[in-house]
Amino acid sequence: RKQAPRLTQGSPAYHIADYGTADAGTSLGLLTKMVTAVRKSFENEEQDVVIHYEDQLTNEWQSVFNHALGLKTVQDAYGNTIQTPMSLGNVFTEACGVGFHNQCYANSSIDFGVSFTAMHWLSSITLSLQGKECMHSARCSEPPSTDKELANRDWVSILQARAKELVPGGRFVCVNFCVSKEGYFLGQTDEGASMWDSFQSAWDMLKEQDLIDENERLGVSFPSYYRTSDDFLDGIKQVPSLKLVSIEEKVVPCPYRQLYTSKLKDSMSASEYASWFVPTTKTWSHSTFQSALNDDRSDKEEVMKQFWKNYEKIVEQNPEDHGMDYVHAYIVLEKVE
Image (cartoon, rainbow, N blue to C red):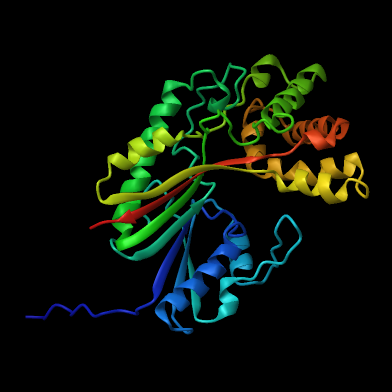
């Protein structure tokens, strides 16, 4: 009889998972600091660290590795070059395309998980806002029940998956878009114009320009949901193996608007600011707007170019009024078993 292979103790590397990494640029600087902190904690400057980048299968993975390996320089909103974890040595990287709504890694294999502005995306597209003026559930006086229920189920699934992956004592930090106690959410605070009002105006202008019909005008339905702190807490209660360490809400002022009003206003024209700021809203929203156009259109890209021109024209009228403030819930969880 053949003897079963013996399980051996593997590498004592420290494993960090970055869920919903997108192009890996957002977390790059923090992960570098985390590697340094881990080595200080272990009192070992050569401690092996593995960074697991996770996103959906269709993610643009080439950018992930260009950024993670330092082949393409990343700068923050203020123009500062960000150091990569790989530059520290003995840091290893790999990618997973499973999707964070599911378990992505083996049981008890992740020491520390992080996720930044990613887990507001729903696991499926509901299109529940088509035919309405809202565009996004956060804009509705009462979020559609379909979206709210799916968001609640998704959050519990996310937590259950992380609970399995984390080692006992491991932590998961989730920085997620939310609707704050004041009713603030991404791009809509008490500072300046609402980004969502500007989106709506720029999109409505397409109808006035005879570029879209009424069904297309009302066809935008963002497949994401900004949960409240109560929503987050309700989900956490359903996963007893995760302990809440802390949760707090914070508003981060738009760095583009801050830089413009404090330093660049005298040297940057209104049109230059518009062409600099608007793309940061385009990266995550373009495909949703485009999906509202009729399937049989061959001019979708031309229509979308006009949409973004409309938005830039709106910003040009009063650049100081336009920005995209971030509204996040900062959640720290710990595996207790």
